[in-house]
Length: 184
Image (cartoon, rainbow, N blue to C red; front, side, top):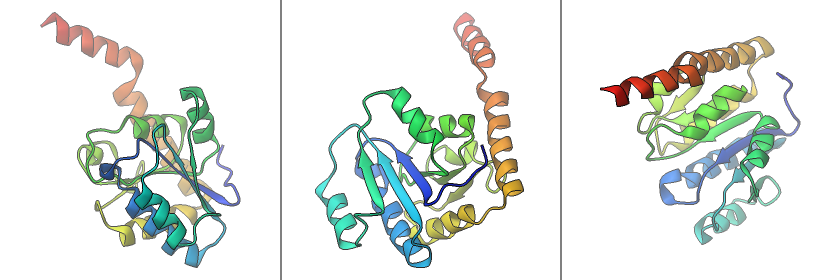
């Protein structure tokens, strides 16, 4: 589905911890809201929210645009992902994020920081986008870019994301790699 929602739906999924970089995505989102108020940012987490993040949301007048939810199952998270327009990984520290792989697999365009192993997954401008970690201005520009993608551009990025996952993370491939690893 290449249909864009109104308001445009941004999504992050992960635990609340400083390394997840939510303060940077919220800052970028607040700046983006000045350009386009028809946006929504949903943060999905299981654990409690830090006071700093709550304060930042309140201080930047984002209570109507930023929502934090605690779904009760992985299935509920996937349903949320399917109803979103763009996944944001604002982490300052990460290995290879499973939720980014899941986002690519279900056809959700990804904007990720360049931390850890994310540059191994994201081919910038081809199957997603990445920005320098901790750089809210660069993130804001990419979010605006994703919002303004044409249908064909969006379709191509989604297709390349799925193609990457099928080529590198298909279950039969993973199974044979694990088998060969343990066989050695």
